[in-house]
Amino acid sequence: MNEQPIVIHKFGGSCLRDASDIIQIAGVLELEHQSRNIIVVSALWGTTDRLIRAANEPRYAGRLVSDLHSQHKRFSPTIETSEFAEKYHKILSGMEDSLSSLSQYPDDKIAYNRLLAAGERLSALVVANELRSFGYDSHPLGAEDIGICLKTINNHTEVDIEKTKLSLQHDMLFGLPIVTGWFGKGPDDNIALLSRGGSDHTASALSVVLDAERVILWKDVDGLYPLNPRWNISTRPLHYLGYGEALEFACRDAPILHTGSIEPLMRHGIPLEIRNVFSYGKTRFSTIIGPDIHSFNGIKGIACVQHVARITVHHEGMNMNNAITMVKEIQDGQMLLYGLDVHGSTVSFITSSSHLSKIQSLVDQYSFSMTSKEYSAFITLIGNGMNSFVIKDEEKVFQIAEHVFTTEHGLHFLTNSSQIQDELISLHQLIQEQITN
Image 1 (cartoon, rainbow, N blue to C red):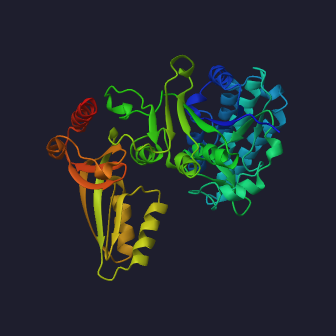
Image 2: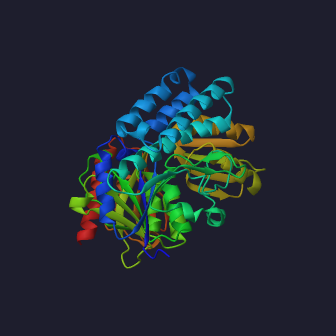
Image 3: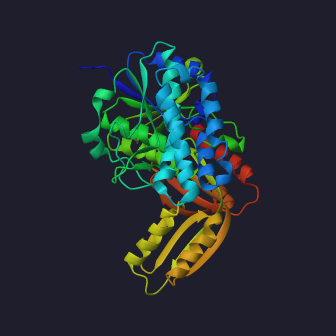
C-alpha cells in the first residue's frame, strides 16, 4: 500500500503555452518528489476559446483541426511517433466528426461537449509524452474513463463526489497520472462539462475523493493579491486566507480563483495553495487557503466589480416559490447575483449592468415590476469577522461609497464615482493604516 501523501497539481492554460513550460512543470514536480503526485490539466493556452468559436460559428471550423494539430505538435514534437500516437490521431479524428455533426445539427449537445473536451484530452497526451523525457512514468487519463462523475447533464454542473468515490478506478492512478479537467461522465453516461474554470474544481473534487494532503493550483502569478493587479496598485501576495475569505474573492474580483475549487475543500479541511510555476522554485511565494482563523479579524483585501446595477423586483402576488423560480432562471443564464435578498413580495440583488435587458425580459414574463439603478462599481472589503468589524475613520469610507450590506467575510459598497482607481487607492491606504496601528 502506498503511504506517500497525495498531492493534486492543477496546471491551467497559462502554464501550458509552449514546450518550454514543460521544463518548469518538471522542475516543480521535483520539489514534491516525496509525495504521490497526480496532475490535472486544462487545455493548452487558447485552445478552448478556439473550440467554442468553431462550435458556434462554423466559418471558423475549417482549419481548426489542422491548426490545433500544429500547436500540439510544437508543444510535443514526438507525439506522432510516441506510444500515444494512435490516441492522438483518434482525438483529432473525433474533433472532425463533432464539427461535421454540429454543421448539420447546431444544437447537438453531445457533439458540442465532445468537441470541447478534446482540448483537455490533447493537453493530457502531450503533457504526458513530454514529461516522460524527464523520467516520469506519466500517462494520460480521461476523467470519464477513471470514473469521475458529474451531477447534471451538459453545462453548469459539479463533480458528484459520492458517486465518484464508488466508481473511481484507483488501479489506473499508477505512476504519474495526467488527468483531464473540466469534464466527466454525466448521469446519461455522455460527456458533461463543468463551467469555465472547472478544471480547478476537478482538482479539488479529486483531492476529496482521494483524501489528498493538499491541492496546488499552478498559475503564472505568485498568489492571490489584496487587490487585482489590473488596478496597477502595488501589493504583495496574501500568505494565508480562510475558506470564507477566499470565497469572497472568488465571487468578486479574482479571476485566478473559482468558487468550485474552494467549496469541496471546506467540508474536509483540505488546504489549497496557489503558486507561480515560473518562479516558485526561487521565491517560494504562495497563497495558502485553509480553515478560517479567527484570531485575526480585519480587512485583508478589496474586490471591485465595475458597471453594476442594483435591481428590485416586486409584485403583490409574488410568493416565495415564484421568486425562487425566477432567481434560478437568472442564475441558470450564467448571471452572477450579489447580495440576493428574497423578502415577502420583493426580490433584490446586484448584478452586472450588461444583464439588465435579459433580466427585464425574464421579469416581464412573470408579470412582475422591476426597478434598477446603475452604479460605476461594487466594492467589497474582505476579511474575517466583518459582521462585527469596526472601521477606523469609517466616515472617510462612506464618503467614497454607499454601504449596502455586510456578510461574515465582506463589507459591501456601491459607488458612482468616475475615479474608481483613486477610490481603491484611498481604501487601500486606510486598510494599511489600520493594520499598522
